[in-house]
Structures are given as C-alpha cells and as structure tokens.
Amino acid sequence: MSEKIIEQIVANVLQGRRDQSDEGIDEGYDGTPGVTELVEEALEQGIPVEKVLAEGLSHGMTLVGEKYESGEYFIPDMLAAAEAVGAAMDIMEPYLVKDGGQGSKGKIVMATVEKDQHDIGKNLVTIMLKGAGYAVVDLGVNVPASRIVEVVEKEKAGLLGLSALLDTTMPFMKQTIEELENKNLKDNVRVMIGGAPTNEDFAREIGADAHGKDAFAAVKIADQFL
Ligand code: B12
Image (cartoon, rainbow, N blue to C red; front, side):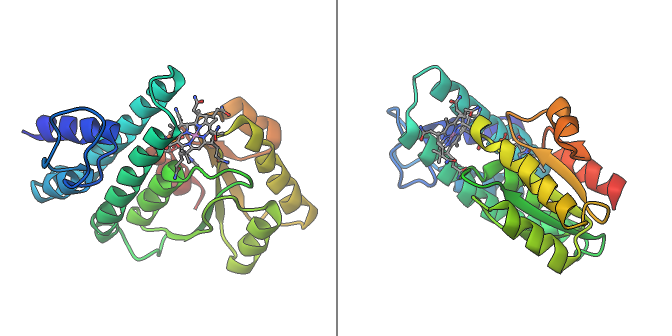
C-alpha cells in the first residue's frame, strides 16, 4: 500500500499536478488526487515523512531533471513540478517539526546564493534541520554574500548552509566564505554547502567545512558541528 502511494506521488510530480483540479501532461489524470492530496493521505496512513520526502518528492524532482536534460520537458514543466513539490512541503513541515525540538540544538542560517533561484533542495534541508531540533533562519533565494554574512553575524549562527544548483552560481559560495574571513567571522561559524553541481572537492577547494549530498547528510553534519 505504502509503495503504491509513493509511486503515485512520483507520477504526479512528473505530471506537475499540485491537486486534483490540475490536468497534468498525459491523459487519464483528470479528477484524480494530485501531489498535495497524495502527500496528505500518505502522512495520514502513517508513512514516515522522510520516506515521502526522499522516495516521493525528491525522487520525482530528480526524474523531472532527467526529462529536462533529455529535452522531453521544458521550463514550464519543471516549474509546474516545482510548484507541486513546494506546496506539498508546506503540508509536511508541521509533521517534521512536531517530531523535533524547538530549535534548542543550535542556530543555522540557510540561503541559496546570489543569482540562483532554485530553492526546493534548500527548503528540504531547512525542514529536515527544523525537524531535527535546530532553529533555522532561512534567507530564501538569490541572496548576496554580504547579506548572508550580515545575518550570520547578527544571529550568531553556529552553522551556515549554502545551496547552489547552477555552475555559474557556485563561485558565490566561495565569495561568501571569503567575506566571512574578511570580517573575522570564519572561526565562529562552520559552513556546509550543497546542491547538485557541488561536491566534496569543491567544498575543500573553497574552504567550506562540509559538503552534504542530501537533506539527511545536512542533519548529520549539523549534529557533528553543533
Ligand atoms: C526545478 C528546477 C528549476 C526550477 C526551480 C524552481 C525552484 N523553486 O527551485 C526553475 C524552472 C525555476 C529552474 C530555472 C532554471 N534552471 Co533549473 N532545474 C530544476 C531541476 C529540474 C530540479 C532541481 C531540484 O529542485 N531538484 C530536487 C531537489 C530536492 O534536489 P537538489 O536541489 O539537488 O537538493 C538536494 C541536494 O542537492 C542537497 N542540497 C541542496 N542544497 C543544499 C544545501 C546544503 C547546505 C546541503 C548540505 C545540501 C543541499 O539536498 C537536497 C535534498 O536532498 C534541475 C535538474 C537537476 N537534476 O537538479 C534543473 C537545473 C538545476 N536547472 C538548470 C538550469 C540551466 C536552469 C535555468 C538557467 C534554465 C533557463 N534557461 O532559464 C534557470 C535558472 C534560474 C536561476 N537563475 O536560478 C540546470 C543547471 C545546469 C548547471 N549545472 O548549471 C539543471 C541541472 C537542469 C539541466 N540539466 O540543465 N530550474
């Protein structure tokens, strides 16, 4: 039963169907539940939030990415899928946060770097960290290095998480770390980076303290540093 609903979530992410009123791409979806309704149902059935996230929403978006890469999908298709996943994550947040503490484990600043609008991965990481008991200040997308550094200083954050999905925006991660160094803040805050084009080597190269391949890794890194 749980496998079936996860499969339906993946299929509906691919169709970009937020709810039952959406048509989707292929025939045969009319009037059937969309991503938000399926996620609600899965959670009501007691399927673990982590499973819905990883095997449903995250996996679905990965497949959307592959279809875009192969030329089968275009930007509006990616956007529709992203919107459906975003709406589903709003439903999941209270379930995740209910399981965790009240931000008592430490403070983390999260941001997608300058000129980058991708936020699904960052939002996933943010909800997982909140669920694990951290207080997270989420600065959103397209955040300049100067703003990130200002907030890290003001909030006295122990950990900074940076997300980038574009080759062209990865250098802003380096710029952010350099600004932390210039302001003598680098010793007070650990920096973790993530996002599809990043890796451990890049993290080392720019002076980040850790690279996380997914939201679960982000929680492990936070537990290690805070
Ligand atoms: C959805 C999507 C979009 C949506 C974004 C909507 C949104 N609100 O985020 C829209 C349509 C807006 C979009 C636009 C563009 N996109 Co786009 N997009 C994607 C797509 C299909 C999926 C990304 C995603 O959400 N994945 C699902 C999430 C769950 O995965 P994730 O982001 O990787 O995050 C996980 C991990 O990486 C990690 N993680 C992420 N952040 C962090 C941070 C920390 C601290 C840690 C520890 C971990 C971590 O944990 C997450 C959860 O497991 C990817 C394809 C792909 N394979 O990634 C292309 C992709 C990223 N886009 C791409 C491109 C080119 C663009 C555009 C330039 C297209 C255009 N010509 O306009 C624009 C750029 C807009 C901009 N300035 O940012 C390219 C990038 C190529 C490159 N390497 O530079 C990709 C790879 C597609 C492709 N193959 O060509 N895009």
